[in-house]
Image 1: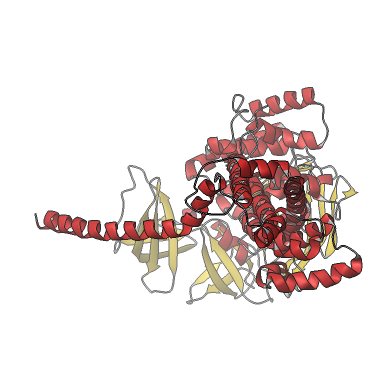
Image 2: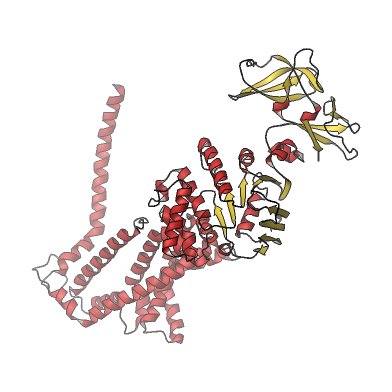
Length: 359
Length: 274
């Protein structure tokens, strides 16, 4: 799996401007061998531009792309040895499944016997061993997805690119395919760059995630790091649900939230440089008994209830009106559903929060 | 009850309206088709004049056509010119369509207008201009000259059909082909063009017809190299015998056969079995 040796894919200082708009502003990125790295960001964040530059459909204005140390910045897509799964699969509608999968081998002039063997092998790998003779339109969405995947890996590419490949599938199938693609990628030890705007998908699929915004990488880290310790307001807001508070540091251990409540800080704050952001995940908010104490605790009213099946979400406003917090609690026998207007006492530990500079 | 009565009355009204429309349509059809239909019996006439109804039946005008080498020469020349025009116009028009749909360059809209211009400029004006120009190039009287003249005229048909088809084509497929190891030409050949085949065939057919039927350009550029429409025109001017009717029938049959072939070839992308 992800080893620490030289990166398979290196992007250095990639910049791309479209007129006055800078789509990509000097991005550096290394994808390690055998690693699945996800570019996660909203539309217009530059993730797709970066993917196109790696695939060869765009040329960066500045910067370079290297695969295994080989500079491919100017190489045409065909010479890059990169397999790609497209958003709507882009299967060739006039070719059978087998012909689709054989296409990259045909282009590489691989002899017929070996071609057929590898096509068959790969179709088996994606669990479609008997579908070779069908046309793409005769397959379900999930099956088409598998064919697209087979076609992208049949020629043992050095790199696999996935461009929002699950967007067209319904939720259940999407979750299943996510796991399947992940399993295949790990089994073939493929180095993969995955693009999505779906943060849940990113958490499921990735060894590491690069959260992108405004043409730059806002944060790069494991899913756990990104979720637990986002480095900025943008990342905190984009990944998972969170309570985000702006606060003014009073000293290196205390801050005052907007609204006036004072809270102890989770980490020692270097101080000086303006306001800070505090993030609290809804599942870390606890329901307290009348006399229970916590680092931060208050009495309040339930304003809003959202039932989610396994869990339930409450928006709770403190009695003094200074603070509003979103809490998510698991539902089990001991936990009955509270209705809006109900009085509750809630609180959390200071260490459950995460701080970062506000701006 | 109310509703049913209403419906029945409505149906009756619609029926009268329907009958009127039917009669009108039939009349229009008759008016338009009669000259075409009349040609068939006239071509089988025993008379030496074009007259209807024919006084008697004979195949002599077909015999006349098939035994007169000027008719056969003109026919073969027209087919040759039309085929060459088809190939040139389809290739150039398709290439132009790619440029118009995919290209990003200044003046693209101007190129678009220019490429459709031959449809707008009156043929006679165009013919005079080309006559002057080809005269200097010593292209008058050569069948190749007619091909060039016809090609300019056929390109707009190809461009209109192929730009429409290309706009609906998902370019991701071409990108996919290139990422899978195809160069641009291979991607277009293996991936882009096959699904566009019905459109390509329609475009080629229109190009063929536009040349095969064309008179004015051929008149100016043909010289002694007469095409079939020119020969027919001369026949009408000089002799006017029912050979012209026989030729018309043969022409109609030929085009119909091609049309049937085209619709057979053009119907969807047939799965390739291997």
